[in-house]
Length: 229
Image (cartoon, rainbow, N blue to C red; front, side, top):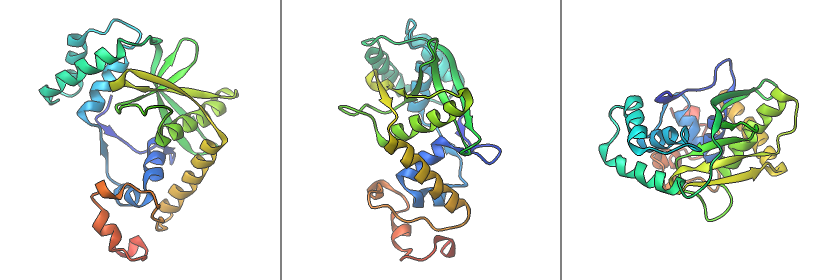
């Protein structure tokens, strides 16, 4: 597992990039050439996910986390214990494969499936808590992107996939809806326009309050962002 999440190779747009553009294309514009580093919490949840469906031994998993990220904050050992306690409340299918790369040449996208069970069902891992019900928009987009890739690779319809919210020990199945596919195609158009040098439009529901580019974005005054950089 790498510490840096890199952009897609061979010109493919990664599903993680699509999620970032969907959240706010303007922020993606500012950060499109910057590497994205995973957090300690993500690293812990990711390592734990490899053991789902098996005996969850906290000490062994923590040792693996420290091999992957030697500088992980020791205080997060308690977070691992909380995650394990939550995951023990549910039954999990063990993974037959992990970190499986999927690609759609038709749509020019690529992504990674965190876990694939022996029956062929797939899951993506999240280091966030679950919603009271349903799945986040970003996770629906991730599932739809993987479905696009798998359908092209296998020639079979992909109905949906699981989202595993590790801190809460919850797995939710999401059935891909037409709106998810439309959202993915729309986001693909946005990211390709950005790569052509076009200034993205600021979305109405962007998470501006916690964005470090808030003032810079407000100062753009409707100009092309490329003129301001």
